[in-house]
Image (cartoon, rainbow, N blue to C red; front, side):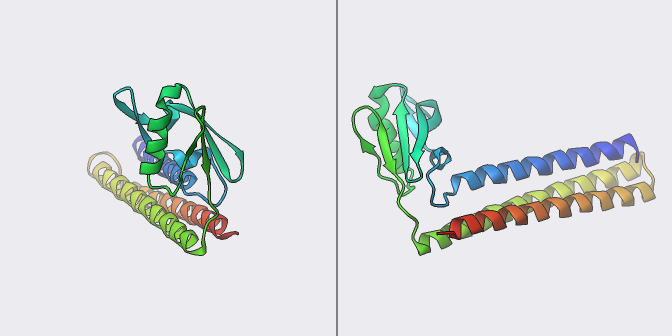
Length: 187
């Protein structure tokens, strides 16, 4: 395999790997009944005139499986953080004691579990679309190389390698989705 072909394959592999990392990050935000600081990822807080992620305004911890504790760096931001958590529509109602926020994580209902599994599958399908787009781009790159620098056989070989890579990453997405779905449905 030529350097150009290897470069196309390496680029595709790196992009697909980043897609998997993004999916894993998405899955962290989908709760499975246990409290996790990641549940508050994506919550944006009005903080000194700017809108910033909650993790830039407070320390977030979980003393047990049903509670998230948010300790602000600046106590004057406590009300803004509480409002941001409520407005994020996560189903949480933070309790403000003047020093910190306690966020009770309610147990999941069967209906909510099914919704979360659907959300998991949607995120997985989006990741698969991303993988297929990366495959298409890599195959286009292989065809360009065929016109310029590599033989037709080398191009076919490269496209086969790209397909193997795609299959490997799609299988990884399926495995991750299966694990997350089981985790959500486990009572």
